[in-house]
Image (cartoon, rainbow, N blue to C red; front, side, top):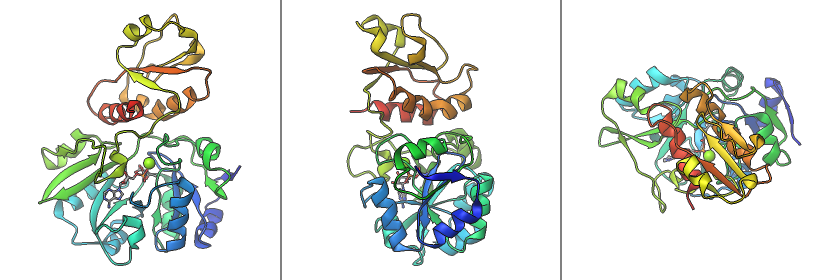
Length: 319
Ligand code: TXA
Ligand code: MG
């Protein structure tokens, strides 16, 4: 088990010594290391068991610092940064040479974001280097939204977890890149498509690909629990299941009589998509602790944060 707490000094000195620290953000917990230190970056890949072709997001605390890490930032990017940072959006920008190639898997763009989490912002302000921080989970598994989630899987590989409590948003940041002067969403996330379109007009969303994705987080099968998950109309699917006692259910806001109450999670009893986003990953993780062999789940309304939630559900269900 790693120690966890709110000691920013401790987190700072570990990071300065080249060690890894889990940090809270408004989206999910990140596994952080010094973005200028190739050894720390290599440890991040190793601890996550992440393939080296999957680049990392760099976290910093001001637009001024972003300018020291990226070149020729397009006006559209500045508009998004000014509107949404600190917040759940990541921008793909041309990298400066200070960013090691290991961070970007050799690409000439770097993913940058300013997270909206008070402890982590203070930490970033006090460090004189930015932090790489992929979600603090083993590659392909569900992102952590509490310090306990991080400890459950990575506790023996890291020294300290900065504990900011449960994450406010609960799904990862929206990743936006710029192609031929057009914004493109590479990963749906905590900043909704509609919010981005209010700033820039119509935005293209990249479909998932199962091979050679531009952003490997777009890999079809990702965010997956160990127990098989099937999406559809829950009542219909339940009517075809023989052993309902060994079935788990993740619904938007309904409960089902034939399934043990302890095997059911409602994402949003209040019917709100932000509530559903906040509960999604812990619901998926919880199902992996139950004596079940199947999870039945349904999609949520497909607008706002619902797009990101449905994206994660579909990928959790992809085989
Ligand atoms: O909300 C978040 O973004 C969280 C918190 C911790 O900040 N981080 C996160 O990191 O989700 P990660 O590593 O789990 O997902 C980052 C995604 C990956 O799919 C990666 O392929 C993509 O960002 N990515 C990173 N750099 C990229 C680049 N230069 N071009 C395209 N995609 C990139
Ligand atoms: Mg991840």
